[in-house]
Length: 402
Ligand code: KDG
Ligand code: MG
Image (spheres, rainbow, N blue to C red):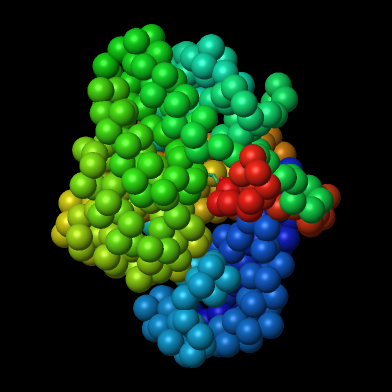
């Protein structure tokens, strides 16, 4: 089998998505997601100008060799743009392999290790009462695990909380908006939120919380300690992770499990975090972590240190990544949990898919390959629109992490 053609599709059914379609001489094609929120066109150009010409004529079964060719052969390694582009190719090739062999991709990754994939949903509200209502809504839908975020007095708005009545969507069209932030107010608020959630929902519901890179290590250690009575499933991205040793400080102060890595793109971003056992869950997922070929190696390395996966699954990752992640989650031994932030109706229509949700678990379906497609006619109705995540300033105006 030979790769005969490949091209990039960019569509914006509510959010921007970059999809690579790889075609072969046997009429089988594969899809890969290359979406990098706020930097979408950089990946599209990287693929079109620098990657696709190198793919033509290659055997799509040679995923390892093609991965190494794109990684080592570029001379410039790692980084979100490069790794998202490599991921788009890698995932598309695994889709082709599955279709050619007439089997779902999970069978190529070890086969089923479980009957379904536990997912967590996002409950949020402007204040604690609204957040409690949203947790109740999620339990009624069958979720066994819920991330809980709420607004608090002193800030007009915060990440993780819908602005109006609709769904929470962090990226906004146009240039970046500005949010304000106070760690002091936040640290006072979060233990109160989780006390109420535990009191209202009892012991069985898994509770998660995202600090979204905003605390210093010692602040995170304090928050983790204060949250221990409420037995969180995890506390996510407590501090920015460029300084991996920062997590030693957190670990020394709390037994609250730590998840990190939705912005990572290589095993080298988490090598120290894993081998020192400073974290419990790794969030780097397929699209930003180089596809199946690199994520499998990273997850196997993490397994040696009791670190489980907890893949990023926000709406800026397309249904192609969601499908790919579910195949991976179903197959590997050290799966922990999968994030689910449902896509809009428009996005689901552009990417028809076989994955399903029932009783808090998802399943990728048993169609050959990934079981996800791209309706290019519909996609063309939603042209790219510039969109960014907000930026964040402390109350005195200092720019800080969002
Ligand atoms: O693009 C940014 C979002 O993916 C991010 O804000 C979502 O932190 C997030 C999460 O945990 O889903
Ligand atoms: Mg997060």
